[in-house]
Image (cartoon, rainbow, N blue to C red; front, side):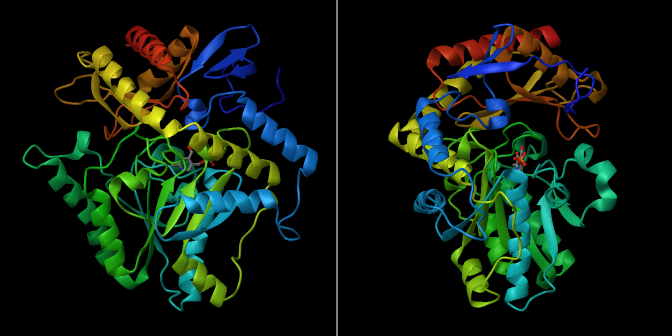
Length: 439
Ligand code: PLP
């Protein structure tokens, strides 16, 4: 009998007692190859000695200082580090404790910006179906995952959802990928015009969709068009890179590959690699200046924002990624992983799509490859795959499909940036066995 309320009350979990490199160990001594970083968190794997010594050093110096009283060198240094490599135009960092908090802060920054500049009527948020932006009420309202939202809908602010950019399911046979991307982006313009351009505050999107669809990259040109539309109507663009950012897709920020910069950028998981809870919202010069010359503060705050231990973890992880040139490995191992997944699943009649960027890959499972019909969600295929993978000693991140067939069960694969070619082979072998046994 446990007094800890687990995510799933009736599931018995193994007890994790240690971690080293790409592996997590349970209390029986069994080792699990962590091919999902938990949920795309552990970008440096486990027990990295340089992160541990940075944390010990910070703990010896100062564990906590309230940001209403002090700033700290470590938080300042992390902000400088993040801005040095930020997408163009972003020049201030707000440090929080995770992804949902980063999204909440971004939504409130967008709203406060319009209040500061005398446009308080701008209040509508537009986001996409098949997106996840967090579980707190603002972030949940922005997300498009009905399964997560439905019972809480009376508590959620009104948000308007458009189609995601999801070529596998929504590209028509008579259009190119680029044409499809333009068509998908034009939905944003239609929605802005429908709501009234002067009343729209922000558009929120994940550049590469993670948890709700399994590493879905945008069509080429999609985000350029989105940026143009936002600029045309004065709508702020919030990119949520909580999962796909900080190197996961092979560039530090996923949006670099789409050639655009947002007005607000959220990051979290790979920022601290799981060594401490940390997230951040990066803001543009324009938004910062409006706050500075307006009210002089951001009307928000959390007790643990800018936490020195979290900042020390973020700084150490980010410095190691650069020092060890790990983005190079993300790119090379990402290509190898894509190749091996294609070899392993390319002929499987139930694997409809293999997709992603860098070390952020997904496979989507379907009953029938021709019709792309998903499996009945009631079968809980994703849960079976997770169980099988764990029994094989592999951690991957399977998620269920939707009843309306907009996405099938899928498996997200997001190993640490230190993964070796041999470990990539093990991932594909064990995942292959887990999927085949589950079908
Ligand atoms: N945004 C995205 C894109 C995410 O994938 C997640 C978590 O999976 C969040 C926000 C929420 O982050 P957290 O769980 O740290 O609150």
